[in-house]
Image (tube, rainbow, N blue to C red; front, side):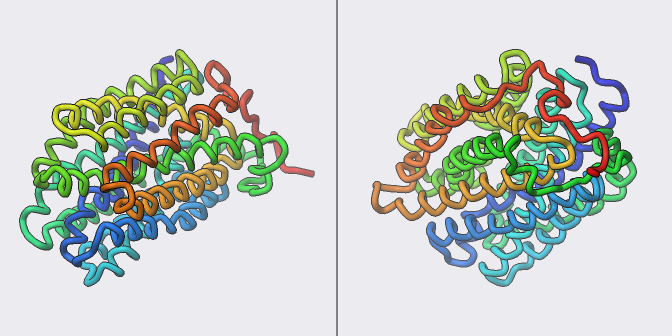
Length: 409
């Protein structure tokens, strides 16, 4: 399905916002091990800090709900400024407590951008290309993550080398004038605003029509993140402690196993989600990703490099298809609010998985087996939750989740 010039320009502006926010948010994942060495903290301390930083999801929920009431554009710009400011504070944090508190706000603003920019990409996409638009958005988010990986060798410069990367990420605030000039409100949001449709009604997310959708999507997000969070956020620590990798070697590892495979996963996911359907792509993606990533934490040698390549392709394809369902199964006037609550479910799963993995390390024989144990959760989601979701491929947004035509009497 072809995009018009206007639709491409809108998507490009959203992608710039996504890349900037992703760069800010990915640094804790990459530099967590270096930060704990600076402040002399343990694996358990890191796990709790990562979990605590996710409490900021409450701020994300408020921001997502604001996007229903005040618009996608305004809220996105505010969140980018907030993420940059929080990382500026992180760069000069005098203690691990201040670092964790600052990252709580970084995480909250970045998560809000992930939700709002994702739904904006879908709202301005032509029918039949919504998953493709999400895949382009995903590539932009991956670009920001890749930049954090490229800068990882800064941690080898000294005890506080990680601070340089956080300071650099704060400079994304310089892009705000450009964002203001090119980022526009979505056409769907503009239409319901002009019709004076009541927006951001929390009760509609949980009512008879949409409540079952929310329950299934929330449970799927929770279970998927029980594994994806410790798997992604503790990999660097696992490689350093269990396989004696240097930070420069981890940067190479991440580039090889997540760079090109990640691009393939996003593009493949977008195409398959449109041609084969959201549900089958989500199910197959979850199963393959969980199986190979669990193997990564339980093996070594050459398979240490092969397993995550396969896992990242499957994970991104399945995650993109599930993300499309998150966005499509609710109407425009509550799309931000509903996805904010779904984010809370996903973050709750992340926090649970991080604490579980770092707490069970001693009981199951190491960090690797503890993380692998969390991989059971997404397998449960693939088997029992996702098959119950409605299919949205080859259907229009107005058919899947129609918006009201005007104010309620």
